[in-house]
Image (cartoon, rainbow, N blue to C red):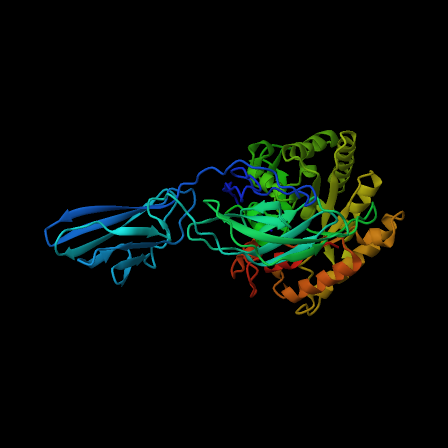
Length: 558
């Protein structure tokens, strides 16, 4: 699990007033509300005017029997104009003899100029020029009836609505929320975002092709549709409806499981969590990794960004805005885990707390492997620090769940890994879930692994259940299963004979649903999104579509 430097990115917002039903703010990602609360749509102020593309005509020269002219097409929007088509009419006495900057098709006196194949996009704030020579007889006259992408060339109006979204799907539900995805719309100018409806009420908005509707009632069926809107506020026809039924309220019983795959947040370019969520339907991520920085007992993201540097803050805030969240993981294969650098419990507790405070965290993970999993002194310091963190959170009335990610074999945790859990029990650290890294088993533990990696991952979960049961005697079998998580390495593992295919994930997913495992994860989302062949830090080295594994487990609810 290699980490590389990364950079922050920005995420563009949008403006829209959807037929007076709901006002959105620039830069917002999702506005989620209960359909019951939104049944009476509030009165909204008109949307801010959005500048539209223009095509300005100029005659450059005239030599009595002919002339040269041009149209300058300008995109004043904050987003690219991904395609364009210019249409105008010339008098019957004028004939175009040559053109550059576009491809002309004439029908009588009407000319339609299309973008050339290598120059279809006009960047935000940029212009292109379409020029032509023409002959004429009699008196020269300017072109007429100019349209750019079917709108007036002066940018005065955009009256063409986007196409209707298609493929609306309910990815997953909880007792109070439903996650949806759909296939995007097209528009003559630019699709700015999407409104999600329950009946006539807008219950969520999104700039991408996924959204989470919150505030729903348990055990209730809802019907949703989606409509696209463009930069000028035109609203598409609605998509076909999809139904989603929320889960029962567990009322404090075993918690529903979730999908929270790892993201190598140190990958380059830095993964955009919000965009991945909109693409895949995933809402939870385990982020790798926070390790000791350049100074002793100082937390940093992969030894590059201190906790006060603001790394990924805006993206995490955006993700939370659409109902998602992150679970940063301390440790990992590379770097030094803080418990090995901080020499006493108070300083270690303060180091962990600085990350919790900086990112307003309600969940954290500890990925303990390598030398850290065989270091009893640091293991005990960590357990005591976790217990102290949880006491502090409880005193402040805030939740703080803690998970452990540990190496595992089909036969279960190693003795070192098991000692990490035993230490947590000894010092009163409340562990919500133990996540087994079901990968790189080796030939002795996993002989002839081809086609069996799903089975071996399931064996590791069963073994982990058997190891946790005596450590938590007050829990029921269902509650112990809810403490079990599994994290395979998708695609090619570091062990060349081990490959975790889509069929293996489907097998594991079926088992997880049967036993109500607390978490399904994998290493890692960046590799899944790349769907490439090459370095295992970037690629899965198997045939797959982008984010295929992510989309497979995104609906998981235990």
